[in-house]
Each structure stands twice: as C-alpha cells, then as structure tokens.
Amino acid sequence: MKRIPYPSIAAVCKAALLLVLLGVLGACTTMETQEGPSKVDLHPVFPPPPDPAKYIFERSITSSADVVKEDSTERFKYMVTGARQEGEGLAKPFAVAVHHGRVYVTDTARRAVLLFDIPGRRFAILGQEEGPGELAMPMGIATDAAGNIYVVDGSNKRVVIYDGNGKYLSALGGPSWFHRPSGIAVTPDGSRVYVVDTGGVETDEHRVRVFDTATGKHLFDIGKRGTGPGEFNMPIYAAIGPDHLLYVVDAMNFRVQEFKLDGTFVRTFGAIGEQSGQFMRPKGIALDPSGLVYVVDAAFGNFQIFTPEGKLLLAVGNRGDDVPGRYMLPSGIAIDDDGRVYVVDQFYRKLDVYRPADLPADAGFVARTPRKG
Image (cartoon, rainbow, N blue to C red; front, side, top):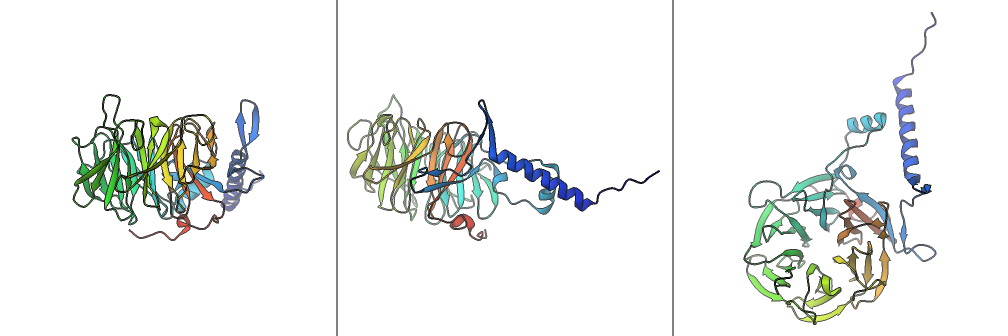
C-alpha cells in the first residue's frame, strides 16, 4: 500500500493564513447590497475629491477587541480558525471624552464608562463596582488637562469624578440640585464644572449649573427657560473652548450659545432647517485645539464644523448603512489635543475616529508609547 505523505505543520499554517487573508481582503473590498456587490471606501475623506481633504476616516471601534492587544496564543488561534476575536462591546453609547488617546465612552445600557486605551492597547470598565463611584445612568462626560474624568450620573442626579484609570475621587450635586442633568464641561485646571440641566416641559429649570470642584459648592447658574439670548429650551451638551468660552447646545432652540465662564452671554449661532449650517436634532459639541466648533446632528447623520462666530466650514458624514462615514443616530463627540475626532453612534453602537489630513497616520497620541499606570 502506497504511503500518502502528510503536509507539515508549517505548510498547514501557511495555507490557513492565506485563506484567512483572502477572506479578510474580500470582506474589506466589497459589500453586498440589495443592488448587488459594490465597493466600499474604507477610508473616505472629507470633503471628497477634487477638493483638498481635511479629514480622513481612520477606524471604527465597537468593542474591546478593536483595541486590546492579543497574545501569541490568541493570534495563532484566530489565524488558523478564521474566527473573530470577541470582546466587550458598546450597548448604548451616549457621550465620549478623550485624553491623549485614552477614550472614555458613557454607556447608558451598561451603566458604566468604557475605557478604550488605544496607545496602551487595553480596555477597562469604570463605575460598575459597588461603592461611592458606582454609576446608574452615565450620560455626559468630560476630562480636564490632568486626565481626570467627570461623569454625569443622570439617575442619581450628580457628577462623579475619577482619575484617568477610573479610581473614584469625589462627587458633587445630588437630587436636590438637578432636574434632568445631561451634559458637562470642565475647565482645563479642573477647578469648575458646568453641568447642563436639560429640564422638561413642566419646569423652567433649563439651565447650566456651575460648581466649585474642590468644595462641591454651587457657585451660580446660567440661563432659564426661554428663546431669548442666554435662555434655553432643552439644553443638552456643553464644551469649553481654547478661547475660554462655554459653548452650549440649546437643542430645542436649534442653536449653539456662547458664554464667558462667569456666565456672561456672548453670542449665538444656528437655526432650525434642513440646509447646511442649520440644525434639526443637534447633539454633541466639541472644540478642536484651534478653536473650531464641531456639532453633531442626529437628523443629518453628521457633524458640522463652524468658526466660533458660526460660519460653516465643513460637514463630515451622512445618514446611511453602517459603513465608514455613515450614521443613523450619532450623539457624542470629542477631540483630542492632536486633532483626532471621536464620534459615537447609538444605533450602530460604534465609535468612529477621524484624523486630520495633515496628521500622519503614525503620529499623535494613539501612536505613542503607552503610559504606565
């Protein structure tokens, strides 16, 4: 009987790797639609050609598997079997904050903050341990220059403060201070927090409440319910810019209002409408290091970029299927000091990252050596 030679282990692994690579390439280059297979641009640019690109779609993060470093055993298993790595996924993301490549996403369904440490290649869940730092409904989130994080707990009507690794530091506010807290902004030195109290149809408490972080003392309020300058109708998100102004999304007045940090009204921009530069369902807001203002609109499925005076410069994204640059229910947005933009979509349960076109892919905080601790 003739002996049949068996292939070596190296040959089997080589063949398996080839099949996996072919499958990945095939999945990345085409997408089946009702009209048949069509090409999907994995890294769309904005604005599209022939205009010079300003932003490049870089990646999507849906779970810890997109960030956590695999060990050699796991890599071999996935290479041979073709299985996908599983991880802790987003359930209902609401807001996002970022500090030097560490991305913090509040998840109202998971009742926690999910930490995606991109340069450190690690993942953590914050706010689920029993104790003073436990969260019930994390909503708005912000960071200070030191990397501490500030989380609005909507159900407990307070702000919980952690260090960058999720260690509980303190809390402020409480049920007697807020009607329906949602968004938050913090001064770079962490000395003051500005908490957006969205209010409701039955109350005039549509405002921003300001607290001293060290003492927890309430300092003053900004605004009341109304349509005039400095008044709000369902405010929701807020951010502080490099110009030391507070920017508040006045959702049901379909505008952004700007204030000095002492509460003095400065100006407003935006109006209801379906045209570029207008708002239908404004959500998250963030400012980049140069002072440009980024506002998410859930109805448009994009974020629009404005000057501080309200001049529209660019719109990024659109409504559509779950492919790069498309959204169904975008909400929070944040910008790192290197200019990368992070936006979350509640419907597709994803976090998308955009890179400024003039920033090399291997530059910035996400490419730096991980910090210890």
